[in-house]
Length: 218
Image 1 (cartoon, rainbow, N blue to C red):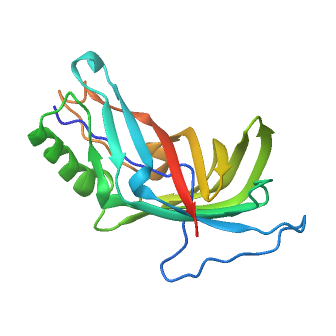
Image 2 (cartoon, rainbow, N blue to C red):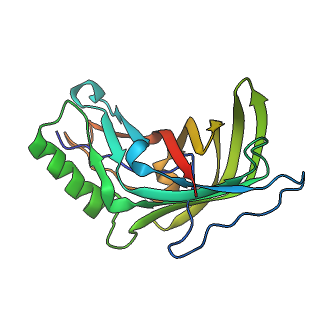
């Protein structure tokens, strides 16, 4: 079945971490408390970033949910390890790297879905990247980790909108880990989805993003 799925991201998204433009040099700045701010760089090979597109429509039970993996993304986060806030984050996702992983689809169907993601849903020829840049980060200690709220702007399918991403963050030695979940309405970004059965099976507007991001001290 060819349902569509979307996006991503980011990530994102995710939401959880962050990235600097290529060529930038990681900075280490003095935090207001006198402690040093550090830069952590996302390790995508050890991270996981997923998009869950829920089935809908009158005959929703004939369709399948989509589980789309964001395969290529990068980013940096600057923070004070013992306080988290203040912090700044940026992230960039390669929109062409999204791919279906759902067990309900054959390899051939997954290739069809990926083609539709690129050509119909995300229009990656026009919009090759999905980006997130934080505007504010707040944190509260929670045992051995921090509960954070990351406020920022996400740009998806050429549309930029504000978003708040809740997450947990822990720092151990040179490693940072962030986990969380957030939702986006694809209609807010003009993201289309293909349908089946003359529209009786379709993807719902709400997309759920989950992330488990690992970053290393730069």
